[in-house]
Image (cartoon, rainbow over all chains, first blue to last red; front, side, top):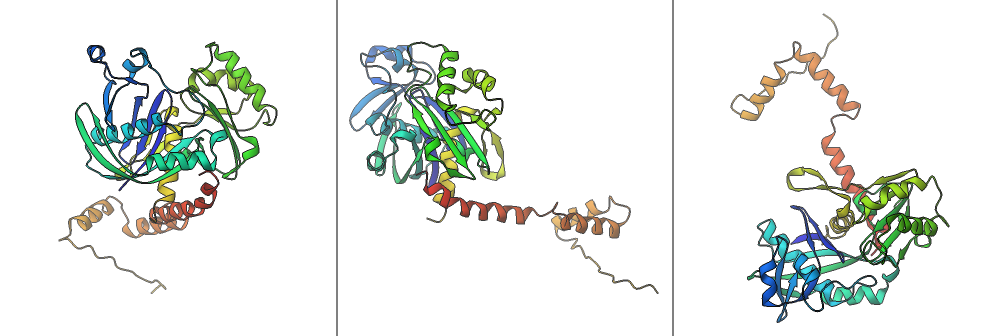
Length: 281
Length: 71
């Protein structure tokens, strides 16, 4: 049995386990023969439940219905394909033959309801067969936990800590006091790095600040992580001087400690939840 | 004769690991002073690798309650 944290985002899928990390483009489109010639390194032909898809960069631009489902709940079919792709890729990347997984996945804070959570669990908690580039793998996802999307457990600490996590479709804001999630100071903004028409990062930062400053103090400790951290960091820090980038560390086999890019923070947080919650099972 | 309690330490020279320990200890002029410094550092919390791991595990157990509110 292998524990994985999977952050199946709209732009990138990030996977963390004890062997290390993996990242891939999550765009999916319908398969057509002609696009195969334009394949890049991260492009994949994915076969799942009798359907064939393009995954990766080529899927973003090719295909009639190309792209990703942006924003909102993750209880949709793209999440299943992204998750099983994440597991398949992890097996190939680290040359593993594991066939049982316990996984922790994420759901935007505002959409983290019992109904949505159960939908995700029932879609994932079963046996899956997936073929990528002709390599077929069958495995069981025996247990699924659905975490609110926050990077807190990537770097847990006492005291008051707030997080800004700009994804491509949504931006999650979360607050913890002495490790306890503070619901009233946490929410999901309905925009992210790719969902707004304007790519004006300063305007996006202003909007995040306008939203957070109603409740957050100027000198509060803030950690920024997620796919959009680099472009927003300076703008956020101008207003909240105690802002830092969350650079998560993972403990690999043989006790090696590895520091990762902030884009992995949620996946590391999910993985750390997994090793705490699954260890006695 | 002064009032001293002497504790001998034996190294098994057939055991490569213990041979390594012995060679390492030879780097210090006084074996007795060296061992006493190690004990001192242990008392000050600098050498407790195993306890640290146990501490991490027990912290992780406390964490389960906090995580319940997130999943």
